[in-house]
Image (cartoon, rainbow, N blue to C red):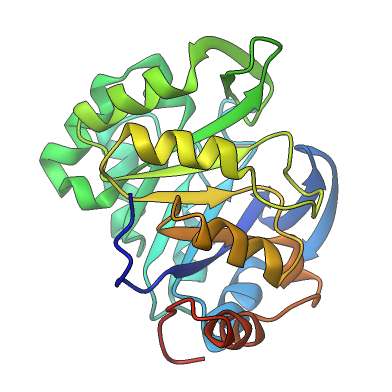
Length: 258
């Protein structure tokens, strides 16, 4: 569980498809949101604490992440930069770090080969390994883990997988609710709280942000160390700076500058 005294992080996410930022609803109906380097610079200038770039079709297309896109985006940033998508080996991870990434996010490859988490953590440190989990509620009132950009049901249950990821060396969990993704209906606080109680590493809430009240809700529930959004920043609904000012006004600690 996050410390009450630590500032909560606001993370901007760039979902990238063949070099362009896109955004959809529940991982479908993607629409163009712009150039990743331009958006990265804008979010950092507005006060984002970190930025995550996810090459969302690298795994499903069976290709490597677009390193040049990573390199071009990294040159615009002076905040922590996490990169994910198509990272299948220690060599892939090293290429991302060489291109300017500070952390790597692994999802499908970690599910296929959980020892990859340990390999990367041993080489670069646990703080550099984020395990991304795409979760969807099932009829049994628990959550299933999906891979390949939400296209493939894995047969794994979220809480068992998140515990294993931590044991294998993950330094952070990026938890996305597929049910809420892109809907603007708010984070899945029940899911996020369950995961936060299951592990002692930081948990990033993702999927469903539509307004200040949703960030306030997930932080006030004490179940997230950070919260991530894409659509509300990309399409000018709310800037990071405005969001931080609003959160501070209701007593939620966030980092300067705003």
